[in-house]
Image (cartoon, rainbow, N blue to C red; front, side):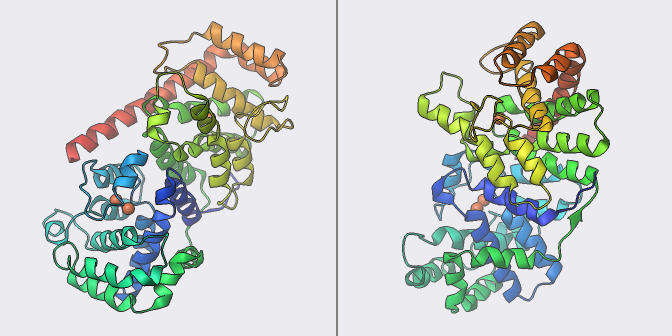
Length: 416
Ligand SMILES: [Fe+2]
Ligand SMILES: [Fe+2]
Ligand SMILES: [Fe+2]
């Protein structure tokens, strides 16, 4: 695939999407990454360490799935009952080359004396812990400089109890600088994060991109048991439809990646809502329907992803302009393939509110979409002609993903 994407831009986009889940934690990952990198620079750490600390901070709460749990963490003296450091660690360990970042995330809530008793601890997780707690002490509705004394007081009272003394001293000297605090009140802190992350590692190899996509998929799918294997099914079915149409490698790769990311906007929805088995209220329905808007919003932050963003976020659009949320009617063929792959995959997979849907029913639904002018009838006909083959592909990859999901859950409960 002729692609060049910045790895850090992907992480940054992903990090912001983790904070869409609730207004009260808006910008949390950015705030923590900024404070952590400032502390790391004040401590004169190497550029490599500063980068790793920043990336780990940008995704440190990846293992928290519900809005309630995320908000609970904003209490300074919270109790970690969800074990989210461990879950985050296991999620990140599924990626190649992220072991160090995974470890930083694993212990980001361990008090300093406990931390140094852990087998493979990395002191810098205590730096992220400190940055995280400073961030939650800030009341965004009040003028920030009025809060500095209070925050310093809370942090120093936990010096050597929760945080390493040297880190607290670095914080105390940083906190004398008004600019350090004021940057948090504007987008300056995000610019500083992006500058620190340069020069960047670029992903040019499609397999590396597939690999990193897995992390996103796990994070989306882990939040809802019934979507546990949905994204992978959609992407492989979309690729197979492209193959039936004779697409070249580049276009097949674009379809596959778009499938991986199509529901990433669901990160903006609560787990409670995604898992709800009873009939949804009008308000809940509207919330669910907004997810493909957020898919667009998240993917638009990644340069090089323009076409992928458009295909991924159009998967609920219809040719008659009655889809959502963009009300588009001019869909490209690739966009339509993903729409069809999404419907096909959803109809032939297991869901909590229905036990099984057969191929005949899927055929009927797809045909009616075509006959009603919602999706292209010719494309639907091709899919219907290869129904068995496509459904085998769907089941094969969904089974693999379900296995990975249960392995991961097992690893988490063992680590807990
Ligand atoms: Fe956390
Ligand atoms: Fe946090
Ligand atoms: Fe969707």
